[in-house]
Image (cartoon, rainbow, N blue to C red; front, side):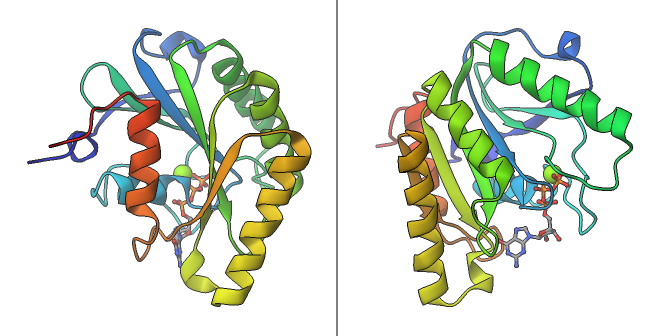
Length: 202
Ligand SMILES: Nc1nc2c(ncn2[C@@H]2O[C@H](COP(=O)(O)OP(=O)(O)OP(=O)(O)O)[C@@H](O)[C@H]2O)c(=O)[nH]1
Ligand SMILES: [Mg+2]
């Protein structure tokens, strides 16, 4: 049987909050620095390579992109934070649209913070963890690109992010992940199932 994630389909790319779909049902949003691999993680979880657009050039995802699972549940690809080459006006516009989404969205049930495992705990990650703590939203930290690290370095990165989560008061789960190889996919889906209230398949 096809999992709900395999049924994911593109819904809308919203440049402005007015374009967000109706605020009901369940949503989980994927946040993270530009190029951390948010879109690749979504594609891996949904087993659909071309679903979210990915790129070697940072700043690919510039809008809030909604993927529908079953009419009630959605995955949301947020624009990457910290894309240095973007014009300042554009940067401010993205920041506003992300903020509006995070602060106002009632359907939002959890945040997946995608972090490049080679550079954990940059200022944006800390800011995001603080926001998650403040808003009391369940948080899953995915240390993506785990395939690029040796075991020891990966364990260190996990500990580092767990430490930051603890310091900021975020009840976050931290998992190594590889959108390229698939590591962490099952555990991440189990977490998503809970947030989206998807009943376990029998
Ligand atoms: N080795 C490796 N590369 C990855 C992995 N995940 C993503 N990448 C690569 O990292 C680059 C950025 O991936 P994206 O998924 O486009 O990143 P993003 O966070 O959506 O980027 P923006 O939309 O620009 O914010 C691409 O070249 C991907 O192929 C991974 O797990 N392992
Ligand atoms: Mg992207």
